[in-house]
Image (cartoon, rainbow, N blue to C red; front, side):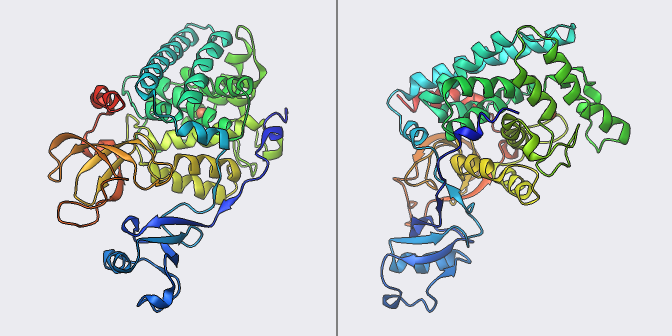
Length: 416
Ligand SMILES: [Fe+2]
């Protein structure tokens, strides 16, 4: 096992315990641990309490502009948010050439997806992918993520029902590079990681579609067949042109669990290629948040909850998962959200200082009728009647039949 990524772990991850928040951004489940004034100057009896409902929020708003929430005691916000790699955060602030970045990201997305489709066709005809071609495409992905990670994360939400396999490969590649950036990996290591991620599931190409897409639970025989994709992937990549051993390791090991309960070999965490640990996390995240022929996609917060559960069960790496989840935040780009007004919007860009108040393209009005309207929640904090205007729910695109691709041109214009 190469200790490549272990050598590049962040020096130290500082855990944020409390965050400052506008009172109007409070939501039920958040635990207020500090106010912007002494507790004794307010009517609150307890010096710290959990927000139960909108009445609590309105009470706080009457006395405070800002409060501090304790992330460890709050039920709504992910606890233990590590500080992302500083260089990566710096890139989140880049907005000047956003339109150009969006076009470049779209071109990279298409180029990479086309290449993956070619690989799939080649494997079906008994050939194996040319790893050098894969590296070239991944190199473009790395460059796009370095320029503007949020645009590439947005691309992962452009689901295509007729290209699920290639979209999954692309998404896992992008999310893996995101984690690699958070770890501070250099470009060469990012390309290695991204190439491993892109090719991790190539073994599935030889698994019959009627088993892969079966709507109900798999029987014992079908389970064995589906699980064989790890070995099949290893064999395909080992027989390939310009072999890169990392891709073989990840194809073979991305379903192993840290506690040794995974497959096909039941390896434990210390035995795994570090790239396997990254791909295992983002593979699960994308599987949950992507549509499947037999079910709609899960929303972002549901995926986060499942990842956290897997961390608690010692199935996936906790530190890597925390970094990934903390970077995506509560409302990542492309996420569908419902507002207190009843409107529904697509998250375009997060606001680093106010992560609960991103920029949105509102696509459904309060009556769920189509509309297209840009809103920056960091600027608009109340509705026409003075009531708090905020996100109240994370939803799925399929809940409302929203296709992000249909709004793409307008979204690009938003960054003119
Ligand atoms: Fe897999």
